[in-house]
Length: 256
Image (cartoon, rainbow, N blue to C red; front, side):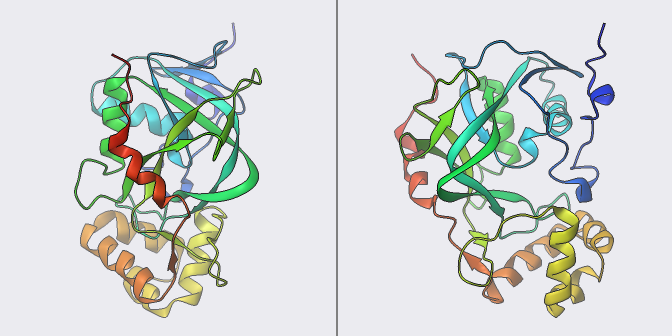
């Protein structure tokens, strides 16, 4: 019998504990995260659950398992590899408390991305909301409903969803120098580039990605300084999805 544990599949890494590995390893195919295992999945939609497009470490089974375990949640969590048109991966304009600069969704009209849609029950949704700072008045992300046809989400069987949630960064995203949102090249190359081009960032976080991650993960106030620095250096732009955050309270994620 195939060993479906996360360790055997190479999916047990936790970016919260190893920030330079962010966003962590994503599965090659859809699966059902059940404790320490990722089992085969033969369903693609779940009426009693909420679909959330995963842009960063929420597509990493090890990170998801870690978040759920902290809250004592053991219920299975479906992860569906999907073709998403209209949403791409940008760079959050903030330094995350675990010590990395995270991914953030950005508008990419007409662009197709292979992303995971995770399907969350009520308790799981509460955990993920909290991990993204959604309940806090000054959290980094807001959960926004991205409706079709603005965003097209095609499941493995060819069916599409009427929309899904995504966590949109309330602080904006980093731009590429032309004003357009930059893409996220991976944690090490991103930090290497930012540290090489921003002397003020080096003065706060050191000269290497390792120093950056160590200092950021040890000091929440320093993370806030780094976040403010991005804005002060004129590196921040809108991700193009901000208008959808107005729909946060306009929908109920569960049917009566």
